[in-house]
Amino acid sequence: MDLFTESANMLKEQEVQYAHMLSYHQMCRWNSGLFYHHPALKHTQYYWRVEPKVHFFCDVDYDVFRYMADHNKTYGFTINLYDSPESIATLWPETMRFLAGNGNKHMAENNAMGWLTDNKRRPDKNLKANGYSTCHFWSNFEIADMSFWRGQAYEEYFNHLDRAGGFFYERWGDAPVHSIALGLFEDANKIHWFRDIGYQHIPFFNCPNSPKCRGCVTGRFTDGEAWLNREDCRPNWFKYVGTG
Image 1 (tube, rainbow, N blue to C red):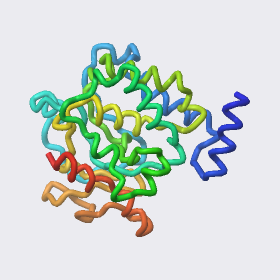
Image 2: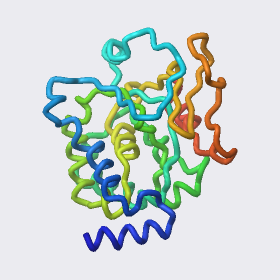
Image 3: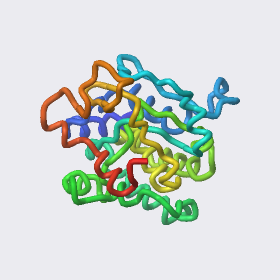
Image 4: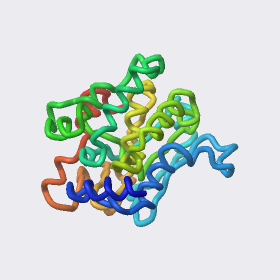
């Protein structure tokens, strides 16, 4: 706890949110590597994460889990953001250590390494995160196949990160951890952008151009300050992977 407090003080100096909130660090660790082992989910394969105070703007007139299964999709997202590099300064170097040790055997042939390492659009982020673009799927919305988290590649990766201590001595979130693992170990074609699901988690939006949607300005990314538009990493996803 002394080391946690000292580390949190350093994070606070860099204006990292929730630095001293132990429960937030525990939540990030839980959502990264533990929830899918809960006994209540033992016989469950797919899940849709839904959080308080989010908004949905479009009629979802099909079974999203059936869609995932029928189209062989592993993970679905709506919003794709840059992260705070100060909160994950050693996450990418630790990932590289994992790959050098034994993780390369898990690398997908059609991976999303370009999206994970891009240094052109936001070079400041890449520099501070030591080679990681900080692009990640915003995991307050995710529809996913837990078979991936329960698989050997992800379990080995999470256990490596857990031993490194960054969930507590930095503020590694489940969103970058999930995203890096998916970008490295899963075929990028199995990651799906749910472009047709209108969604908001303050202050960001996914606003489709669709007659099924109401109350959302088509194409809006944020209703916050203008600089927040720079935090959208979907253009990088489209550049390196495509729109699906």
